[in-house]
Image (cartoon, rainbow, N blue to C red):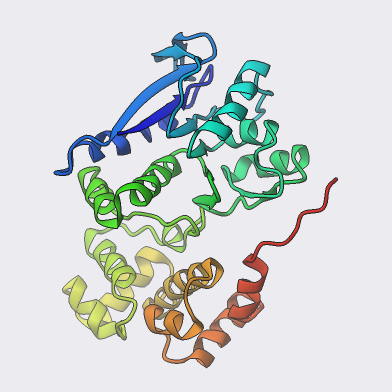
Length: 318
């Protein structure tokens, strides 16, 4: 049984607590209950959210947890954590297998000194302030979540659920994480290296048929993804499909396909687990040169330059 301690801050953001639903549905899988979640706070008792809804918490004790997760605040100005919270987090980092934060919870990890020299993410709106206050942390605001050794950090709001699914994947395997995502009726399980701002967010269609086309593109990048193929998915003629797609997304089908291919390819290159050949094949670029030209046209640098930039570099003390 994995024991999860979730630290609930005063005025917590209620969506950060919703991330725990991932552990809840994982307990419904055929393998049986695997997670025990406990809500914690400095003094225990009821803790109000930013909306006024309160949850009951247990006070900090000497208990140990497999995983400690820090919840987040809705505020833009994140106050320093109390000495008791910082001390508990430092102890948890020594006694727990891993420690994680959702959104502004990263401020507490950094205050405790746990992120020095590590990569971390949070909601993009907090990044400038976080970077100013904690210059020894490698801040990467444009990520859904980051795993650096035993420490996990995530962006805000719904990204906490992506983080929890990744923790389930690490514990129980990819199939269990996929099954949990299906129970949560998640349209797409986002990976950690995926950017907080997605190309798909810029292409919000008005009709279900174009939404289906975008899903088809994302799930079939190895295909040619010709106008004829996409028109068939939309059940429209090629000419009618091209007009409808442009009207609803503001982009031509060919441009949309290239953007989605590029987004997937950039994630795979920065993640660093795949060869360039594998990236080309998975994302559907015809060859390395075509992908290279697309990267230079869009990002200003070739794929290998983005990979080198994503690799960890030593952070000098301020």
